Image (tube, helix red, strand yellow):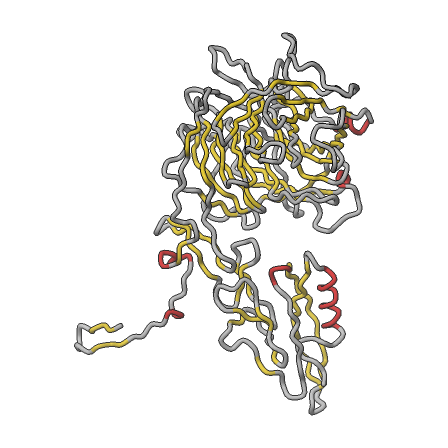
Length: 573
């Protein structure tokens, strides 16, 4: 590049290399776009052959199986406005996706004492278990659905299990039998609406789910963590084949993650979901909680909380472990405060989130987001047109088989949403391993930015961490490279240009292959006397980064022992 000076007319020559221009968030306009950054999604309207409306209902995605070859959306309860009054003529609906048709299964009650189902006819006095609103549900991998609480003639605190048959002709119900021990009686949630009911645990005999928040009959927001432990079918049994599954309630103990931390205030109409579906038999999954409102406090919450079990594997039963609340610090643009939104699991560590209400003029919202839980970063999904109208009290469901979101029901500022079963193929911006995703305000695009040389991108986050002693990296690394045998580095944050130094005469080193992405970092300072070739004792103050392995703790112990016993970066001859 040449530039003429005004005074002398001479040319000043400056050469620029690609390496001299470091891409950062400050000059993000020159960064590469994230994958899917330019993808524009489209909401499609599925009207169905019959129009239905719902508000304050539940929806569960039923993935196609051998007994039910079509993806189906199961819609439970809610308030319908097909007539002049808010009544529910068909409390259970099934939307068959391939044929774009709503079906209304017949309710059956599964007897806890009889080997056969009761009559398929529904008497005039029969009230379907799904005839309620503001309840909460989850589905199990065997196709069964569980829901708790809500409002019918009054506020409820009963728990039901339901299974729809493969043809969507019958919906089979049975009420869970609550244990009568004193602990269960004390831990049973009071009747409520606007709560969450989230599956967090499963072993060979039990399913566990947490009831959180909601409004009591006195319209007071509730706190506390109620764990439902539900007996399950054997692995070889069909869903809903066991009679009268038993329900046991336990209260969970939870406190702040840090000594100066806090716990969430009581709330209702929040969004809650686990960030994983890899259920284990030894601990509960973490639960993510966003937003909600407290009429008592006059607050619509703009908070993202995570409830987690202890990190260490414990032999203590899950209901007796101590849990922690962590208020997550979100990165970049966020959805903001709201209640009445809907949330759905889409992939390990990723949740989809849509709609809800704040205050006028944002009292009804129509945006859709993805939350990367590990990175605590929100990414807004871009559509040719947001779903209309803006709403709350709707449901958002994701089908992994077809990678599609389904949005149904809700109400807007003026009325209940009608004729609105909407779907969209799902695609969120992302970056390849080693690059962090960032929203660039200059281009209004998501871009990928590399961590600078001498650092690495912490797995599942947007934090660039300095490479520890004895390692180095080039720009855009997902992990640091260990110094080769015969070399060492006493500095942190070394880049790949001159990363390591040859060991002094009379000393040697061994390379230990350890990937930073598996570890948390803590520091152990120690001094060692090393005998050099000339017989002089040299005191070397070293800072050893002991890498505590989450998945392989024995390796961390061996590494620390190995160093302390004399096989550190610099060894005696």
